[in-house]
Length: 303
Image 1 (cartoon, rainbow, N blue to C red):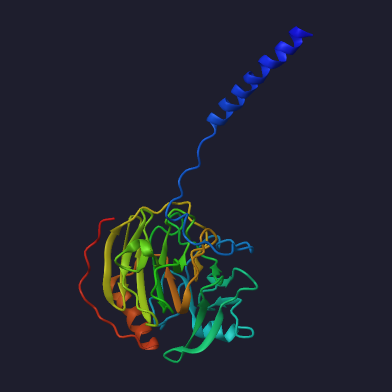
Image 2: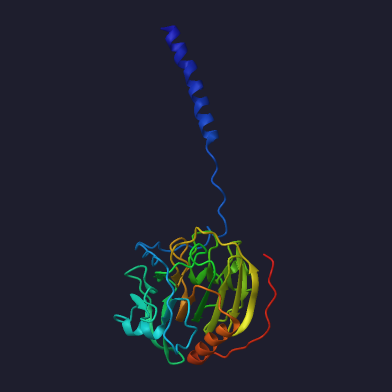
C-alpha cells in the first residue's frame, strides 16, 4: 500500500509538468493591426452574388455620353429611383450594361432612393448604419488588373472616424477601396493601396464630388472635380480581395458604412485616355452641377 501511495504522489508533479509544457507550446495571438481594430458593425448575412462569368464589359450604343468601350458597371441614381419600392433600393441596374447590377446586402437594410438629391437628379442615400449594395462585378487585380472607377457622391460628415468607404472589395489586405479614414492623415479621404492607406484629398461635408479613380497593376492615380489629386501612388493589391465590388462600404470583412449620397457609379475594365476622362468629367459635371478645376498632377507621396 505504501508503494502504491508513493507512486501516486510522484505522478502528480509529473502531470503538472506535462500541462506546463503544453501551455508553452501555445502561441500568443498576433497583435491586431490597425485595420483589424477598425469599428465593425453588423456582419452581412446574405451571400454575395457571384461575379458575372466571364466578366464581359459592355459596349454602349453609338452616341452614348461617355466612352463606349469597356464598361463593366454604370449605375445612375435616376434609375435607382425608378425601380425603388417604397423609396428603398433593393436592386440598382442600367439596361445598357446588363451584366452589371447592384443589390442590397441585407434585405432589412436597404438604402433609400432620394429624388432631387443633387442638381435635380436622384441619388442613393446611405445612412451610415448597416446599408450596403453588392454588385456582380469584380474589381480585384486578378480579374480587373487595370480599371477606372468614377463616382459622384457626397458625405454627411468629414470626420475620418469611424471609418467609412464609398466603395470597396476589402478582404482585410487594404484591397481597392476609397473613403474616409484617419490613417491617411493629413487627408481625410483616402484610398487603399495594398501597402496601406494613402491620403487622397480633404473632403468637406455636404459637398458634391466627382472622382475618377485609376487603378493599374502597381499604382493609383485620382482626379477630384477635374483636378489631379494623387498621381502614380505605388500600390500592391492582393489577388485575395473580395470577388465583388461593394457600394456604400468595403464589403463583408469590415463594412465601414458610408453616410451620404451616391448619385452615379461608372466602372471601366481599362484605363481611360486623358480625352476619355475629360469626356466623362464634362458629362457628369454638367449633369450634377459640379464645377471642374483642371490643374497639373500632384506628386506621389511616400507611405
